[in-house]
Image (cartoon, rainbow, N blue to C red; front, side, top):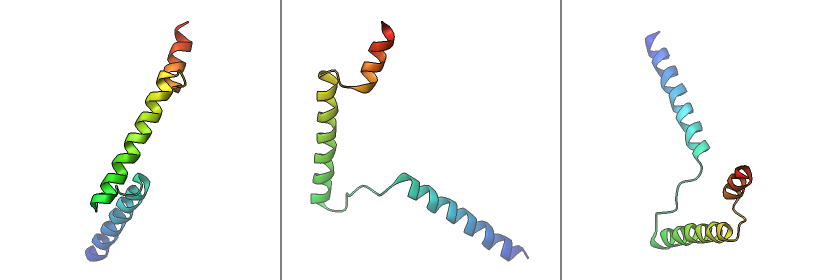
Length: 70
């Protein structure tokens, strides 16, 4: 029956897309002004922590590259 095949194909495609969305994680909290502010603050904090680590020589990628160059 073509109708059943079409339903089955649509269902499989929908399931695959739902699994892909779950793999990508939760959506960004940009629904409210305070949510956007909190998200921006979190990004800036993570960036500053990584930048400080890089300056102090604790940055993993930089250290691995420096270790291989000697």
